[in-house]
Length: 299
Image: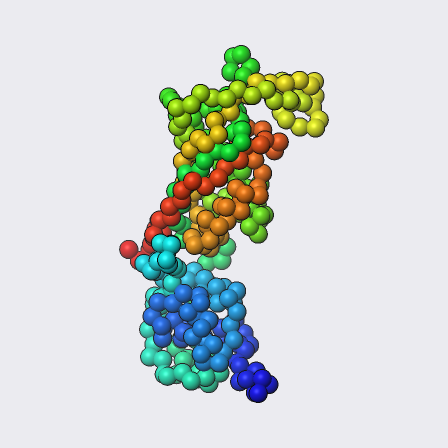
């Protein structure tokens, strides 16, 4: 019986066939998540992995054939990404077996449109759908300052009463820890970072830190300026730092961003001045992800 079931399962032979199957599934469903697409094709005795479904859907979307809908939310209030047909509207016959429909001549207009869009797609052009994640971090450990004052105390940047972290502070921290979530550090340029603002009524903590290079304040195993210590200003533990990230959906899906950030804060390198040897850590206090992309060509 198991052998008979396996023989009835149709495995797509080419990426073109997979794209046809994905288009048929989406048109039948209306708005479909990746799991919806896979389930529909399985109901037609077809076989499509999650990786294949995501790749086909994103390729079709980049070619202007699919749109994204984020109006549906899960039980946690996080938007569920669903795909809908954008420019192809065909009357699809009833499907009993996916293998019977892939080579159906009535789908030739669909195949021609898929081929045309693939040939005319601009090469080398990266197109992203961005979403915004507003994050409030709570400090854990010593978040060290960056710049020495006239007395040699390494302090934080300030604007009035606020302590400021510049976009490159978050960028450097994020880049070093991207491999933890299976993303190459080289993609850091696709993420946009904003300033972080920390407000606290508590006094800054002054900590004496051992350093190797006294002139630069560099914390390392080797140095050229002798060995000694520096007084470093640190944010009090429990201080809230608010910032926001602008993330391409294709790099980290919105529903996975909080999990990714928990891994980075939990297992990644330190944050703040002298980060490589710093004990400064961040934990997530609150996170809010926007419901829709920043820019939609359909609007």
